[in-house]
Image 1 (spheres, rainbow, N blue to C red):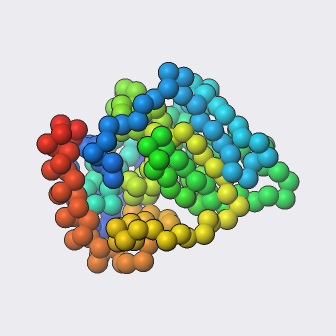
Image 2: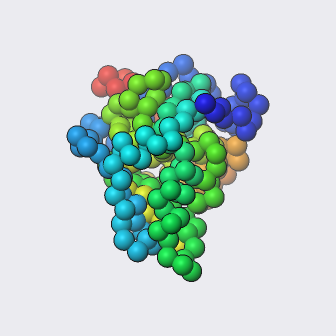
Length: 232
């Protein structure tokens, strides 16, 4: 078992407050969790010459690991001492992806997608850290729909929006994708390309300390709605 010990135990990143539960959170609280296949798989694609589809049992079963870590939401709350189980992203990359990358191709970024259509583009360097998991269990039990079944990315060094739930596809990229023109609400909550919690990279353009109050209002509104629906 590994423990996230990059920073002093018991301390929280700037602007975070500890809560004593782990709520379902995200932009789609008005929708139920996505339906999971009886035999889920993950597809690896992008710059690979051909997609690679791997069953969840095969993906996680070979080198299962455990990780005790905190989870930091960009809205300002932190759920501490969570116990995850899964497979290290670095092990998956070395086992399935690295041998399949064509000579002369350099992977720099990774696009992780969920069954709920959420996605995040991470730098490969960030995902190859030793405490990054593709997790299928939380607290000794299989993930449920609220927390990302059947598989979720867990990177304690990045805000929750980078920890994609319901992972179904992982694309390897040879560079950062071009920025599009998101709707106004998405620009207001623009994600940071690194999303590192200890650097308080909450927003793509605004400093973390400035955007904190906005996220706290959003947090209170969304958590209140989740409580009314019984999803917290």
